[in-house]
Length: 124
Image 1 (cartoon, rainbow, N blue to C red):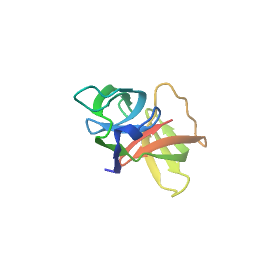
Image 2: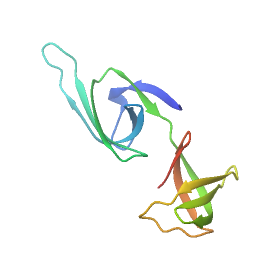
Image 3: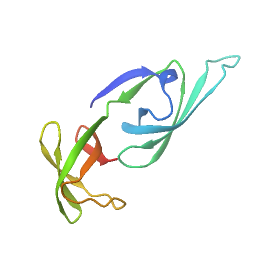
Image 4: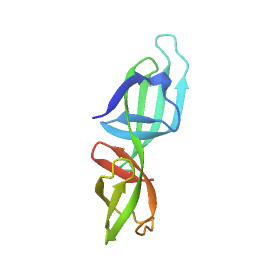
């Protein structure tokens, strides 16, 4: 899995983080001051990039955490067949099959932007 390690204090809203081995986009990030017997804590509220589930995380700010490497790519719709569509990557000219989201209307020869991490893809 394409990921790198960073400290929790380096996270910010809008960036990505791995929670429960799932890539998530951070919606809210807050910290609590250090107490008498401990270090500062960070609370992260995030939503799964590919599954849409909400997840939360509470860690010390100096703890190490995994951050996924998600690529943003451009493609062109080649054909649409029911719930599936063929998309050609505009950099590698590779053709991939993707699910058509319910809330998006696509037609052949339309350019789209999508997120890719390993074998998971999602239209933006």
